[in-house]
Length: 147
Image 1 (cartoon, one colour):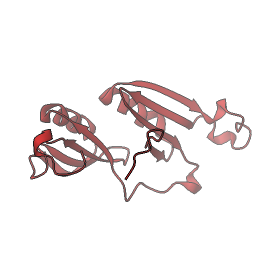
Image 2 (cartoon, rainbow, N blue to C red):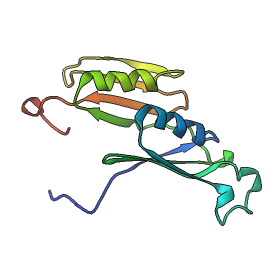
Image 3 (spheres, rainbow, N blue to C red):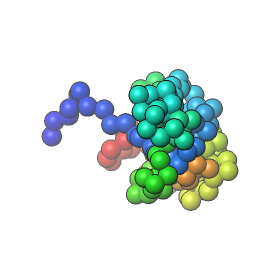
Image 4 (cartoon, rainbow, N blue to C red):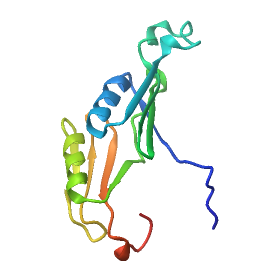
């Protein structure tokens, strides 16, 4: 199998009117540069004036990663399901710190702990409804698959 070096997979989340709050929270936890544009600042501002204060595009960028999102009009919003935003760390203590921060106000669905595939792994749904998998990569000599 060949890799497509020109391709990048980017997680894109949809929110029900609270994208700004979610991404300000994510920036406080993950760091990075945050860029947001409201619908009122786009050529679509006249289409749904009641939605002009909502986010048309948010991008949180870190070293080698991007997380993107927008607010959906209420009639098009569906809660997130069937996916997880997944963060991978080299050190369990770094992963645990992020796990604890993201879980504030949310629900831990699997406590952060050592597993057979990871020195530290946990699942949570944050206060904005985003499901997260927080993982610590195994050392290279112990990996059996994709990491």
